[in-house]
Image 1 (cartoon, rainbow, N blue to C red):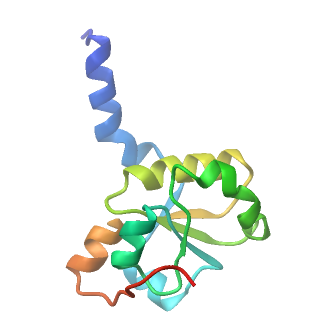
Image 2: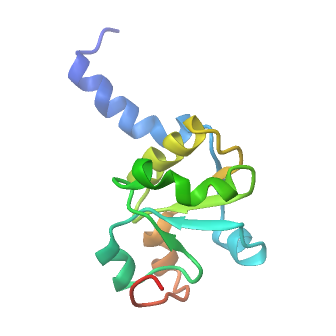
Length: 126
């Protein structure tokens, strides 16, 4: 079967959670064994409205310019999340391309964290 080029984008978008090289981390795993870095790649406003305790905020669109802040975590466990997963996949691809070797994706991202009634912290980054 031959699909038009415009359809391939939709196919890749649907399949992208299964195409990522990064492994998933469940909420229970995150709570039981916190990573060296929990990275929230949502905007500063989203972060201030509520984030997972201990998360460091660097918006996905600033990540490339702020990688120097994360070099200490290059060979340590890093768990990344956004609201629903799209920005997380972008951030993970960038981090892995820059040599980060233990990057994981929080399954369900912030949306499922909130839906599960997990605790959140309000306010800007310290």
